[in-house]
Image (cartoon, each protein chain N blue to C red):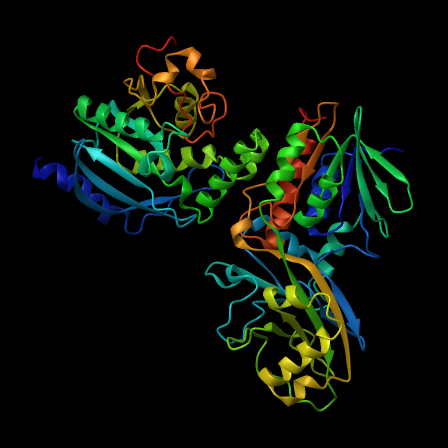
Length: 339
Length: 243
């Protein structure tokens, strides 16, 4: 069966969009290239401890967003990070503005997208290669050649990935060409991340988050074990500055370089984990100068429409912007005049 | 200018010190009068009233001429900040003409208020405007792209404007506008609109092309009539132009 709406990207934005559509009684299907939902709200298990590899904690002011986060689990740590060290620039400076609520999830940040995905039709391990425009709607070609069609198509991806798909589509109609040009005016920042588990007996660091001011390599050290009480060992997540990440994306030795910098910044112990895992975020976040005011919904001359939402498509950036823009796009798509 | 006038406006600062209401519009925006000072201008004497709001860092202001607190049928013009037009004299828009004509109208009326709404105060507003202009130069100007770039959040503007009008204690206003929707929106937010003053700009060398249809195709750098960002929600009406 062909769904009314096909959402490409099962991160928080795509899931929020699909939920708004499902709540309005629309049929909606989600595709995600990974094995599970969540996108950059990613939790990796290492020695049976959850490590938040991308988004370390959720923050925002929007009441709808905060109540959805709180509905996702009882096991929350409100106010995390409480013990913040260092005067370096945080990945999300807005997170520390007054009025902003900060919440970490005890079982990992991916609890939130998993909650959003409940009851939705999600197909994982489906990598979209190409966009096809046809009479009466649109569709995508998956890796392997399968075509999936729908009347309405939503791209809930990092804006750079949406741009790549538009660039690969010949003869874009004028409104989509405008979106391509708009997305081409800025790009996302990468971030290289390592999670590390330390030997039993390592003294727990006296901070929850550290933004070191004296490092051009390390932007953030997250004390994961402080979210996972009781924790049997110390675990950190290390995330690199965007500039350094860009230079080292294709350098195979970057995880070791990141650990060496952690040792320099936090003490020798931080350079010697018993286990670690590395992840490359090519499109980790949008910088503030690229933020847009809202999601985009373009009507196709041939019928149907194509929408765009994500963390760049609402003021402030981050997970809150992803959720807000996804929900708004879903509501717009569900409005009677669109269908 | 009488002392009584100054006192009426100045007393609003003390009145609003602890002001907190349910707010206006869907975002429930609430404003307070926080400062009042004289502002002599080349268009005549005004007093500048500075507002704080509970939603963002935008510092909206009102330019007040004459005695308006408690007044009826007061002339009110809503103007959205446009740095490129108001200050730089850009010919991509008519904002400067619209601003100066609004101020002249208020002087002519003997009393009135120009609400200067800081549309571009959202940090990246100006950057996104330049991006929108860049898209136009590529021949791309769609309503959707402009919306994504933040042009524009009329609804929020009207809610703020309605609260500012309430805060200035005007019982009823005559809106300086060509846009009936502006009147409808303000009415919906509880403003008593007792009339409309047409907003007609005198012709000058920069807007004359509105009067000469052939100029539309005369190779203006940008097609100023067809491809516009909606900086002000008023359609431009130049004196002598067929309406």
